[in-house]
Amino acid sequence: MSVPDFVTVPDLEAFRSGDDAAIVRQTQAAIRRYCGWHIAPSITETITLDGDGSRHLWLPSLHVTAVTAVTNGDTVLDVSSDLDWSESGYVPAVPAGSLSR
Image (cartoon, rainbow, N blue to C red; front, side, top):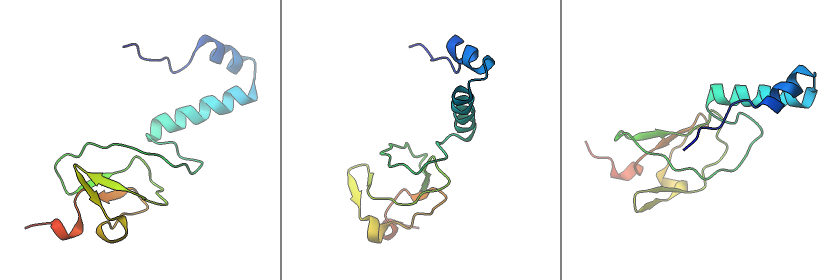
């Protein structure tokens, strides 16, 4: 599997020519790579996360506006009652009522 280039020769030529659109695209891409998420605008995504065995997962975002569905293994969680997710991207990995101590 080949790893795609961050910047191509045409990208570099557009940057050197002062192409404002190319500079904006490249700057956005650099920021998103650094942060690990798209930053803006608000988008709807379906993602799959692998947990580390702990009781929480972190979504790749620091500004979550809605969680519409969560499945943990074969268990579909009731988003309205089982999840206490946060805007900063925290989602519990297990339903609230199933935690044991």
